[in-house]
Length: 203
Image 1 (tube, rainbow, N blue to C red):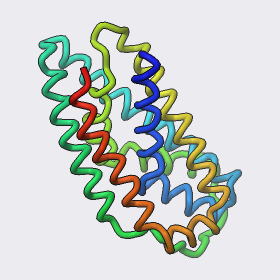
Image 2 (image 1 turned 60 degrees about the vertical axis):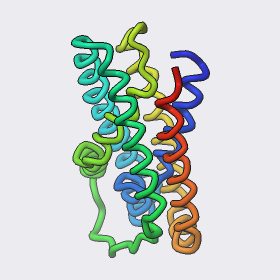
Image 3 (image 1 turned 90 degrees about the vertical axis):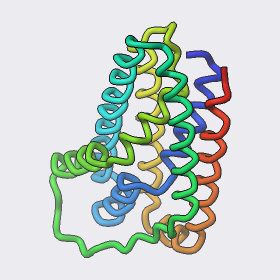
């Protein structure tokens, strides 16, 4: 992957990781209820789930491209339209302001890990997002497996770092989101709209 393409991917991945979603909310909740150390199990499980979703999306797209290279152009435009639509939805979303439930007692690391993994795997928006998002950065002339390692590794590292920070600052972040969450959503939504509008136009 070319450096300029990777930098754009990095920016987009950071925007996705920071935008409201089930795994971010789960990290926030588990950080407040169980502490950041135990929330790390949840975070690592979520990262694994996203890597599996990226693998499913990328290799499915790769199989489609073998039938016709024109599919990549079509998928870029459809994906760009979806990213614009997603940006509008994030812009209009209410602040997260998560209401934490009472702690139900200690949870095992395996249980937290499993919950994080399932949260990522069963989120239909994640599957749709990556199916729209990844074609913007794929280069049919390069190794699909190498591109998968770079994209999945980059996203997993960003997701772990972001959710670890959220879990570590759970109580303060929750109150900040209640106050400034709408503006935060608008910033993330604006990033998605710009990416969705600009990326299909790249060569």
